[in-house]
Image (cartoon, rainbow over all chains, first blue to last red; front, side, top):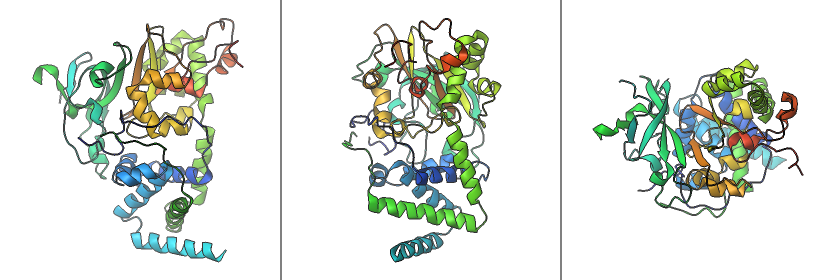
Length: 103
Length: 96
Length: 207
């Protein structure tokens, strides 16, 4: 039986990297988004965040860093709930990229 | 749904679930002992899809011997693992 | 099926830029729609930064000094935190005690559940696939990598945070601290000792 990508107990892996790196601002901002959306705003639940992460697919799950997975899931859940639309997210990313290229 | 008593021997059901669940593979089909009931909680298997997670279910901490979880367990025979499991995943050993 | 991760997920700059843009787009849109405000994000980050192992250390030092407090902490961790003015925001905290017979270690094999209200954000290793995969299956070996040798006479108990409880370890009180007050004792309580990855600091062992 093949485990789901997040169900990692007992799989064969490399050594544990014990290096202590502080969290960067972009990571904390993504964390804060979830804290707000799942906490006082009650717009999504941590259970939904997890389900979104688990449905990223095995390659994305293994390749993405922790908060990259989070924002991928958060945006997916927000679209699912019609809080944001995929089109407006895509358009905004395009604009951000264009603005970045101008700098 | 009556609450399972502390100390009861329980078996974790073994199911292929494609949807969201908080029951990892390594305890499915395994037998352990109820360490304590944590109380009634909403079901994450429906909460994860935007539902209300009701009715609430009893959540238990179930204690397993590590040597029964892993064929090649290299620690001590008295080593254990405690895992939280919702009621609908458990059956009393006598009913297994 | 086993698969090898020779390296944990790494940061690829091109990909990172893509996800940072996604985060920025989502955040901007939520702000424009008045769903959240940038002040709320700043406050949430501030709240995050205020939580940290010092809070757990206060609880541990109190438990070492006061047996009534220790009993209450072992029966209801959340209430014991709140008794010291540490808000837990609904978290169900379970405190497990290291004794001469049992050494406890906490992991979340499915994601990264951690008592953030008491210990702050988890260290990166706690959320990594290697720790999650191995702490449950070979805890003694993992503990050894943290420099923690558990004698044969002591059982290792791993707690997998799969649902609504969050776990904190009450480490054993170090020897030679009989005369120490709570404030001094707090200094001996490390973050990793409250995850169970190591013992509390024994005075005299400090480098």
